[in-house]
Length: 530
Figure (cartoon, rainbow, N blue to C red):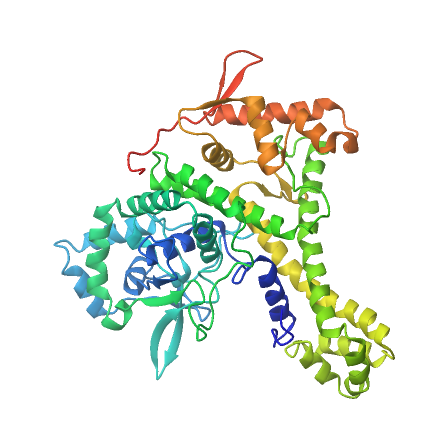
């Protein structure tokens, strides 16, 4: 990271550090469905081309105003309304005005429910709401309002939408560079799924043509990669040739290739993609040549058995610690680049003590709050040597930046687990790993080919070797958790049996005897797979 890479407050500095580790535009605040919708929006905007370097973004302003008329607009207690002229245009589309209400209700029922970390419904304005992607015409980007000369206009909300989805697009793009057949299969299948429901497209086109003016109809291009020196902002991944990207592409292709309706498929994609993004973040957090492989201890007993719940919570917190340690080690590297030169620090120390703002500016923290700036000033005023600066200043700035880490990167880890159905917490408990039905299905479908069966114990071992999943006795012993926990082996056996029951409940397990149980993928391949 260059010495002038950060020009703002600690939040901006923290964000830019994070971008160097995990990727640009990978931020907190997004929900699981939005990661998937962003990816589908981007792919649709490239005309289903994973090799594209830019994509179109759609507004669909009039359509959304029609669907969500009467809903909240912004923070000023306003609501979205259609003009009389717009309403008359809609009435011209149908013979019976009541049909308009029926059509609106149909689309409103497609709204994707979003919730916060406590399970409460997210308070979103109409232009931030989303619909299930039953057809590509229901894909669009978040907007924001602007008022100029007493006229309200809508522009794209870049600060929120198209962040993790862009990065996932790049992961599949890089992961299929050397496997063009796999790339074509993904492109072809998603194009089919998102263009299948022509009846919806017909209705949307009529509404759109009636309500949207010429200015709103214009789509805008946005870069996916740096194409020239004038490219201001674009998504990027720090590493482009990570083998895990091809693994993601293979899993994703196997899932979408099944003969499953797009509505059900969407929920499965949320589970798979959020888990993949979580794996990516944790892999990028590993310090090279240090520590053990990443593992996930799953509580399959639904927090009913304390020791198992505690092991799962510890597994979650250990993985969060990986992220925290990676961030702090990278911050130390950047700090040393700025303040590691003895001669430079010694030559400037007196000047910084006389004018601490100059030091704050050099560190890229000019937008710090007054209170936080005072902490930096207080520390530098007591520094009398290079070692004082290197140790004491590092500590205070690290603490300020780490505070942002907790709000951002750790929020991403928790949000991915919660929305993907592979982790979360209940009131009075810590975050832990568990498996919802949707997550179990996604993992089975992504790893077992259609109409194929695999023995239950072998399935558990495969998940342990591939993902680091720890559930039963054998995996607990192989990972060392059994010995460290000092628990009776029966706890792990009960945990394994609970997963077996969950698989049976989801129609994914067939028992031939007490000793023989097979995991199966009951779906067939779609006929559209090339």
